[in-house]
Image (cartoon, rainbow, N blue to C red; front, side, top):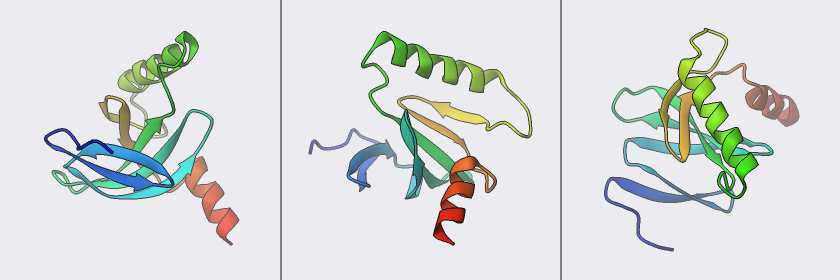
Amino acid sequence: MSSPKNGFYQQEITKTLWEVRDRYRDLQPVGSGAYGTVCSAVDGRSGAKVAIKKLYRPFQSQILAKRAYRELRLLKHMKHENVIKLFQGCVYMIVKITSNSLLYTQSTLLSK
């Protein structure tokens, strides 16, 4: 395991190494899908609870790169109360976390 860049830290979550900015703490797995894994975190600057999406190999093929780019571009411009808001975009996408998301609902139903 390489050492993280300045201003970042590393944490292993569900057998995957995450390297995120120091400002995001208390990473907890939320769910995963075909294109990535989502963790909740707390933004140390604002105190807000956010979701961080780590994409699986977003640049492995031109199709996957286009999908990642399209998602980032759409989220950047969409402003609606029922659509997640993009706070920051890099390899990880930092988005608003909601209690009524499909991942949350699915994991809640499965745990009952």
